[in-house]
Amino acid sequence: MARGWESKSVESQQEAAAAKQSPAARFDPQEAQRRAERATLMLARTRALADLQHACAPAHRAMLEQAIADLDRRLADAD
Image (cartoon, rainbow, N blue to C red; front, top):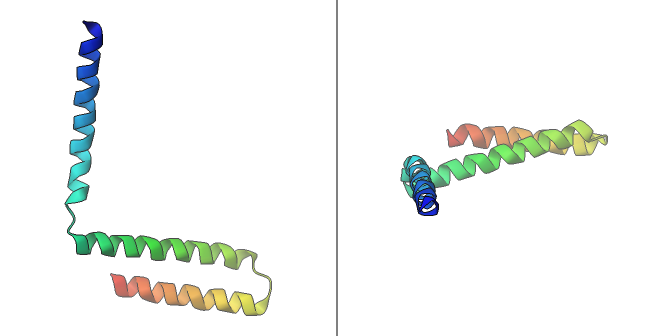
């Protein structure tokens, strides 16, 4: 008897958790695409900054600085 009660409790907890997540899934496809693109740009920028901190060659540093500037421009355009 206790086993069945625990199963119902777990089931209700899972349903409650799914209900909390559903408002985030209400984005229209265009909004979801925009958010995904922004997240991708932010990850690329973070990676380029990390690479810049370890770059020694002037040409490599210049390339990374240009990439970061381009990513900043694209992020500004995305807003």
